[in-house]
Length: 127
Image (cartoon, rainbow, N blue to C red; front, side, top):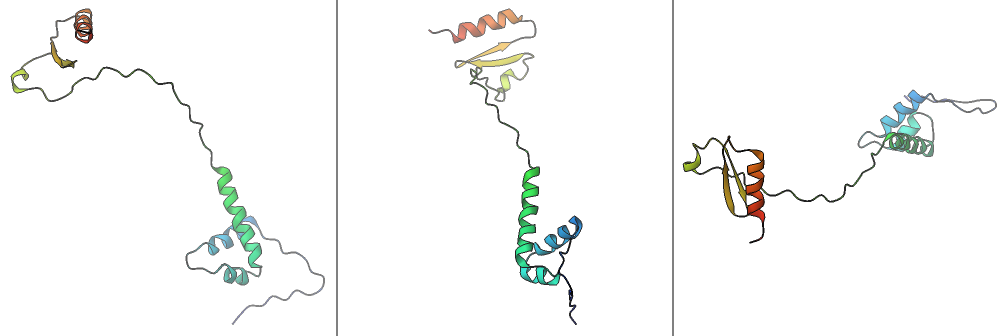
């Protein structure tokens, strides 16, 4: 049994609420669904349904916002520090080990910052 709507008299436009339009568009976007069949079921033309679908996609796209990317200037690369596992003979060492320019420096807890900086500068200096 099919439902048939018959409009008599002067033609007037049908109005659809936004909720009804959204429901029809959602129904037409289901997989393996014929858009023309959905349009016929709801008494509108396929071209009207295609227009509603396009407007719905544009509304979603209009809501997307992009953050501008800011590029920072190239910064000098820090000196590479070797973070490998210490050898067994240095396992009892209580300080830190720094590998610079092929040499390993062991720094104990009693060394000052100035002493450490001086040793590193000396290792990095050209021979």
